[in-house]
Image (cartoon, rainbow, N blue to C red; front, top):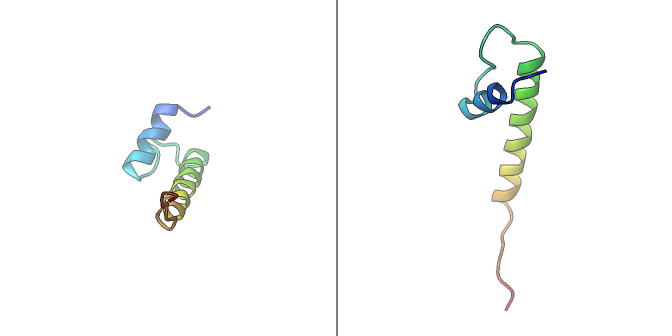
Length: 52
């Protein structure tokens, strides 16, 4: 099981998982990073205007 702190650290640094485990852990980090970037991109294209 992956350490939550290690995953969050890798996401924050936008880099690979620390240590020698570059297999499944890095795959998880890359997937989470891609999902976060997709959400950021979608949010930046949404215009929220108040109702009048």
